[in-house]
Length: 465
Image 1 (cartoon, rainbow, N blue to C red):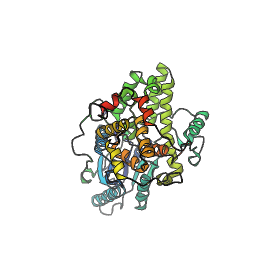
Image 2: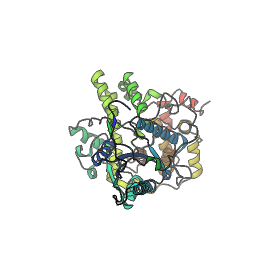
Image 3: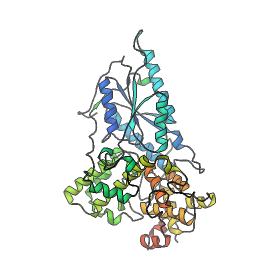
Image 4: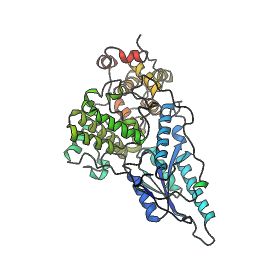
């Protein structure tokens, strides 16, 4: 424990406390919900318990015949959870990890804590303890349903909006008035005179104690118990190697290294390359697990600009983080309608052809650039943004595939899967979201000439001799 970090004592007889449920923000810095949960525990004079739930519904089978979470993504999350636990241990806590549907697992945990406190209470002591649960607010339908289920079970659940670069209260429109097209959204934000982002919150320094009845809590679970997938030397994101460690420390190390090498200045010039670790910022795997916040990333870029100057590369990093905000805000505005087969459009998708879809998944379509991308994705859990657009377009517009199956495959494979951006991008390419052009087709021949003219990428993944 650092000298500046303290844990308050608690009386063994204290029965009430606060559970902090880490959902998709697995860090200690710039974490408003974490500050709120700690503050309530301190105000109450009770205990504080950090929890992560391995959601069995997210790891189970998809409607398309494959697991919703493949080995690369699962191992990345497990490494991030382990890193968070290690950080919490430095401040006198352990991360309790549970398995199952979150509403069930958390409800049973509260009941367990209440029963244990009742057994430990002296005769004629207080009855049922007060237990509150805090977490970040996630506006996707399944995530909203979990919170609703918890409240139906009688739990006091407090959610905090913190997943965006910009504060909702600072936006020049309400969530229901968010412009559907990104250009209109960006222009409205930039005209409004908003600061580029609120400053990140510091890491907490005062920690309430764990529950006195910690030894009686359920046994800790693990999501990934096997060996990590073998690091592929061809990977553009080496997620299973020391050069890209999971967790908050790894995210901060990447930010420092990225800025120290002055790579933000070249971001716009290199971001569409289909291969290479430094072709883009590669922050998305850490953003997806919440090991770094968009405000922390933007603060590092602004600090870089102050030292080295701004250019189109640093602007484009802001631009990409705004895209991320826009996809989350569209979920607030449109909700479950984004998850209809037709999306926001009027026509249903074509019938699903499993044989064609399997050829796409395994990189056997006969289109060399597409097949190279799909093989990289399966082997590494990573794909450049440009290749994601190319392979998604090919499934939708050339193979006449169902966009939902493609989105589900990305969900399973990508270590940086984020439900808001993944879903939003697939809708956009399919013309069933908010693209003003009604969809985007990327001509594979043109894309090959522009992005792999010498065949290096295709040869790397075995689709050219």
